[in-house]
Length: 350
Length: 248
Image (cartoon, each protein chain N blue to C red):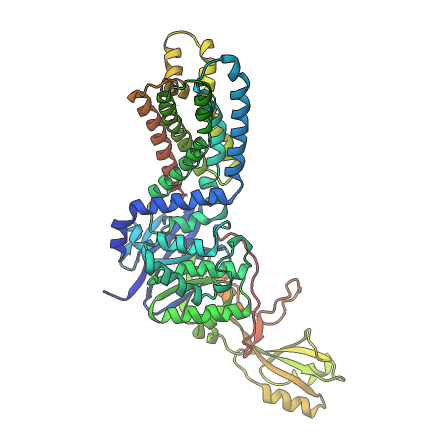
């Protein structure tokens, strides 16, 4: 048996005139953790609903674990553990009852069912809420109940629609470790709009925008695809924007110097020609002119900017945008891994 | 593994879905409220004229229950699929290795089970009457069978309406119309219908006419087939409605 677990050929879904998914072709193998990355409404959930046979594509087909979505939907569903977006659960049930029911629906019985419930409860750390009503649980616990039911039958394929939403950083770390562990021997497809998450969890990333698959790459390759674009420069008291522009502006490769917000007496962003790392020249020139640099950090268009470029066709720009309506910078410090900002629009993905 | 599951699960899936739904009825208020209201209404309407009749029979109770069910059943079935659609749990349920037909039958059984509980709560009526006079138990038994058959048709209609919407209130009112019409409005309007084929048609469609003979102790296969056909038709439409989400 080949190790291609998910194969999509020409998947298209139309809602009226709108194409929610446009001719998607991809293959996912055993041992891969694929991150589906895209803005809300890009077609991530639509793809997942088609793969789990909840909805049918308008055109094209897909094969899951060797089962065709048209020919053998029951085989497809039996092969998948699925966590839908927003984690729908039965609020009036106890966690224990719910997992038992879902296990039974998956064909588990008796001692085997008890054993699997015990295992998934440990894996998702649900022990303390096992006897509680689902309606009384916090978002993080509900999310983990959703994950537990997806894992209960040890499916060869896991499809998780935004598995990290609602979790706190500690829980995220736990779930991430769990997903990575599962991904070693099985196949995981998860969607997110948190780019940082892709970086930490996935081995492969599909970028999807307006229903089209625009990139199929690795998270590292995605991040490295753009060179240094500028610096963030923090200066001690006494420096003025004009004095910085005079000294630093003379260095070749520097295109523009503009003020920005920051914690230092003066913060500026130095735009450079792509890839020109002129940090040593900048500090030398500043020292000569008597300007004291307290912070100097390289900036490159981060995943957000690349994401925007790929999904909206807007070139990756740097720094706070002129006009300043949006606070979010398209640039992040290149080596800063703590960029947890996440787009919180909870629009329906349809 | 998966193919094995396919051959084995069909029947069990249905019972698991029914069992979960049935338990969830009693974890929420709807079942208790409906059963209480029905019993209060029945008690009032049955006992008030009972002693005037000077006749130990529960035929009146069966006649009233037929009418009351037209209101009670839509309230019991309104959430069956509408609630799953609203909360999104339908997505997880359907993506289990189950067929849509198993979901529909499971929900239908749960609804019918709740009606059975309600009917069981009325058993003290014939028992009390039998203590007051000489009660013929034959028609009581056939009466309950008739009520269950009528309820099956109504539950199927309610489930069908619940399959079309995410809103329980809409499911309730849309199911109320056919249940009340078939349940007793047709019978009530019979005197005003022109004699001839309109009378025959209205009599044939009315639940009441099919049910009444059973309440008198006669089980006619035509009546049984009638109720089962209505139920089957409504379940088929419910199945199609559930399946249609795939293409929308």
